[in-house]
Image (cartoon, rainbow, N blue to C red; front, side, top):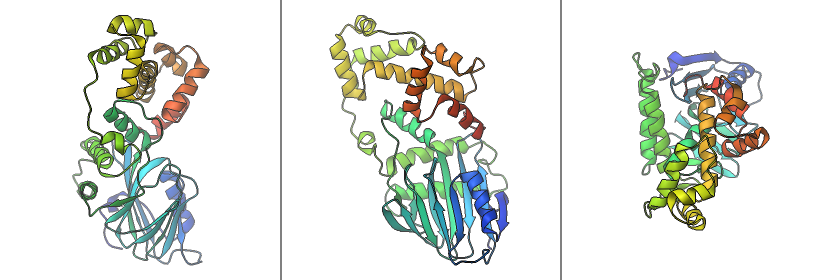
Length: 335
């Protein structure tokens, strides 16, 4: 088996399908592999390499197969992966979408899509895995508003066309750095910059369900009274801000303010304010600024009804506050 850019990060090299699947599921959750032909073991050793990038929420992996195999998931993936062969090819099935993956074609499984791929004998897969919340937080910042549904990319990336070529270039640069004995990414020096570049490039290069908003020309800068309302609400996040107070602060009617927020942010002033408060709670939980517990953090930002708070939090971020704390433990280098 030839040298790989991730060879020094090898975690297992084995002919045993059960051992390989155990390591896959432990690190990537829900990904399994097996030889295509019915046999007890792989004919040649399978090499699995994996490296978390310090100070980021992403990791890079390589799976080198020596026999035709089937890789699949039995549940949708919890992260956003970019999967492509550096050698060989694979027949990908993602939900109802089918295509052939090769060095110039990558796959991004959706949040509700099961992955199934049949590989060639010499298949080597590269996998760049990023936490979904990091993507969606970045996109929300670009749009200036909370997301109403999960981010979903088109399943297939063409590395030969337009900005897709820039995505491939970034991935290869990362592998080149990791192969170096003096890798800056492995030491945690440039990983976060790379992560932000990759996220931004994918959001602008690869079609997704928010592309029409991201690529829409900026119509106008929001009126002064909208900016004043946002400024006031940010300054009073831990308090209760009524519509009457916003009318007094901005000097316009409640209906005018509501229409302006709908036009520029596709939400109401109250919903925008609540989302900013929830973001502060999440930031505190992720940064371990929660010595007084989840309830204490919620109260700090003006949430007095714990049941309603937990429900609003789950609607905003797709998980309960307690799950955010557990997730923070899974990614000890983030934040």
